Image (tube, rainbow, N blue to C red):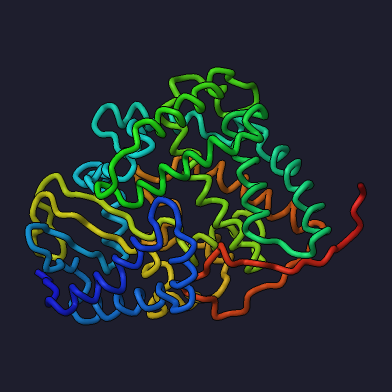
Amino acid sequence: MAISSRLDTARVLATVLLPTLAKGVIVRRPGVMAAAEKVQADTRAIDTMRRLRDRYGPEPVRLRVTGRSIAVLVDPTDVGRLLAESPEPFALATKEKKSALEHFQPHGVLISDGPERQRLRELNERALRPENVPAEAVVRDEADLLTRHVMSTGELTWASFNQTWWRIVRRIVLGDGARGDDRLTDDLKALRADANWAFLHPKRRELRERFQARLDEHLARREEGSLAAQPGDLSGQVPHWLFAFDAAGIVTLRALAIGARGRNGVLESARLWPTTPVILRKSREPTRWHGTWLPQDTLFVVFTPFFHRDPDRLPFADRYAPEYWDGPLDPAIVPFSGGPGVCPGRDLVLTVAATMLDALSEHLSFPVLDSPLPGTLNHFGIRMPVEQTGIRVS
């Protein structure tokens, strides 16, 4: 069994896990993201993971943490197995995940279990089909307004992009009546900021009740052409949809920065800079790995940037390679997770993001980052000067 030395455990904690937590797992912290970009924190973390694999071999590496069995995966085949065998025997609803997500979505599918998880999973899969909403029309409508704004200012920034993105998200999820409800998503952002601290931050019941009441008012309209019109009790699931679409906005702006187009371009942006940097699973029983056993209740950690950007394994690690997605896929390159826990809104997110890329690129030209692409890209700091291309009819 591979057990890391105390020094290697300290390195993993100091360069991989703690910086990831500091950047904000549930909502990104602008100041920390800026600092992480300056020192290229993810590149350092990937180097630590490479040394860990080279020193201990392909089997999961147990960290020396008192009172816990924590194993870091270093082999891509093991990642595929872990995801494929979830939720049995590898539970998705770890206590770390529950303590964070309960701040704003205590009834979400991600922290449910057993028959209830299966029921909620089926509800999410039915509701989040792209054909359920006119997503492309909504995106193009809002992208047109953003294009006009960008033409007048001469640059695209995260602030202007994000404002437009949330209007799109609220219209798709809740309907046109929610388009201008910034208060709703601002309250959600505040709750997500608390969730970054998981069990270390007290739950703000009054704020969550205010957010939920406001959300339920929108859901009660069941506005035609929105996800809210789908059958079933959606109240406990929509907070996660809004949360997930925030990550999709980050992926989309980064995709513009590398000249990405289409669904493959969106997937590449998420490969290069995964918005879910850590995937967690907990074993419900003892499990066998590479000839050795790990005990029940072992917490398995998948650091996705390592598997997505490992230069020893991937010749395209640090460049934009949309062609990768047309061939056989690596089991550990999982921008939307994988197995039974794969994101149920994957196709809808790809449709919205790809449409946004196409709509903005029809009349605007953006500078493109050169390869090798940075390991850490702070989306808050992206400012892209733009030029008008083609003929635009007002």
